[in-house]
Structure formats: structure tokens, C-alpha cells
Amino acid sequence: MDPALWLAFVAAAATMLVIPGPTILLVLGQSLGGGRRSTLPLVAGVAAGDFVAMSLSLAGLGALLAASATAFTVLKWCGAAYLVWLGLRMWRAPVEGAPPPLPPRRAGWQAFVVTATNPKGIAFFVAFVPQFLDASRPFLPQAAILVATFVTLGASNALAYALLAGRLSGAIQRPGPRRVLNRAGGSLLIGAGLATALLGRRPA
Image 1 (spheres, rainbow, N blue to C red):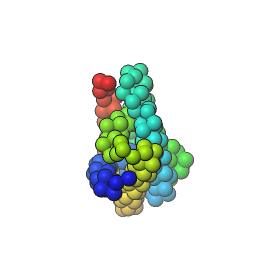
Image 2 (cartoon, helix red, strand yellow; image 1 turned 30 degrees about the horizontal axis):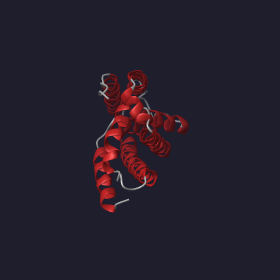
Image 3 (spheres, rainbow, N blue to C red; image 1 turned 60 degrees about the vertical axis):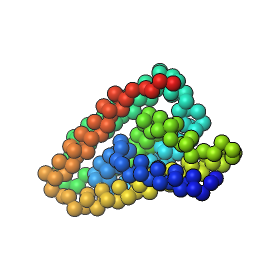
Image 4 (cartoon, helix red, strand yellow; image 1 turned 90 degrees about the vertical axis):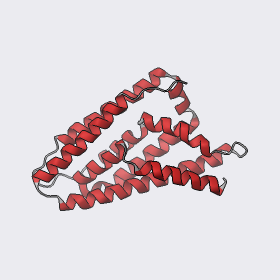
């Protein structure tokens, strides 16, 4: 793969990833509640979700979703409902005392589902990745490099946000500030779910 093309992909992907979306909102909220114990499962879930979403997009799932209104609608509403459910749970999370650590499997699974089923992310991969593929070179090696690069960048970005939230979690012990954070994060997740539900399908 052309190094200049790869560096352009790294710069574009890093710029896109640093802007918080539903996945990062989930990572922040759960890291505040679960502390550092939930960091690695969350990062692993994000990495797995990015790998699945990007790989399936390159394999043709993105084209299917772009062409099938039914497939797009099902995925959209499943993702939206899950985000709203997570937001409601965070809104109602207990604020007295330290919250119980998030079970590792649940943390990783939630991060995976939110990342892998985000239709906006899949649509982004379909529109974004082909710009960095050289039609004169074999497809599979280029696709493997781009997937590995994006997964690494996505996991690193999630890790940075999770560690930051973990530090804040240790500093915030009073019920008042914790309640504000829970409700702010829950509201953002619910808003992200509603925005996903209202996401329109682009014409094929």
C-alpha cells in the first residue's frame, strides 16, 4: 500500500475518531461508574466492534444496507433502542457510595454491540474507506491494512477516554456530582439513540 495514502487514512481516521460518538459516550459513562476495572473490556469491545463493522462493510454488508430499506431499518432501530436503554440505566444508576464495578463481560459486550451495530458508522465506512484504496493494487492486502489501522486507532482512542474517565471517577465521590454526571451521560446516550432512530437512509 502506498505510504502516503496510508498516512492520509491515518490522519482522516484519527480526526474522525477523536470526536465523541455513541461508543465514546458509552465508554465515558461506564468508566465513570466502573473505574479502571472496566477499561480493558470496554476497549476490547470497541476494537471487536470496529473490526466487525469495518470488515463486513468492506465485504459488502454496507452495500446491502444501502440498497435494502428493511435491513437498514432493522439495524437502525435495534441500535437506537439499545442506546436509549443504556442511557436510561445510566440516568437511574445509584449515586450513594461507590458504584459496583461493571462486570467485564457485560462491559465488553455493550461496547461491542454499540460499536458494531451503529448504522452511521457502517455508512461512514462504505463512503470513507474506498477513497484510500488503490484500484491498481490487490484489494485484500489493502483492506487488511486499513482494517488493522482503524481498529488500532479506535482502541487507542477508547483507551484514552476510558483512562480519563477513570481518573475522574476516583475524584468524584459525592452523590451530587455523580448524579449530575450520570444524568448528563445518560441524556447524551438517549439523545444519540434518538438521533440514530431519526437517521435517514441515503438513496442507493
